[in-house]
Length: 106
Image (cartoon, rainbow, N blue to C red; front, top):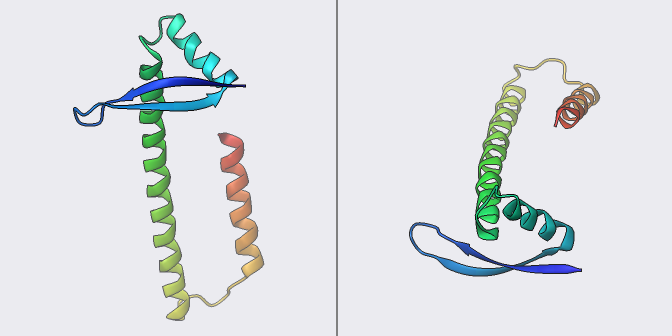
């Protein structure tokens, strides 16, 4: 079952009314946050969640850009002959371990 919640967003003094659909369990969490007094309205809960998502997404995009820069530097080093031993399997395994360690720390 899905619940509908009407949401008002306020980007730069313009208010736009939106209707969102979410699973009943998520709607219950939103309603509980309002009922407990943590938020004044369901719209406030959604706005706060969107602000947090935007910040998290911005960090992810920065990390991806930094990774792409590092990859480009590495490829340039290979092309210029600054890398003598290139063990693809070792590099892939190291990347997997780093990814696994990041995933387990989240």
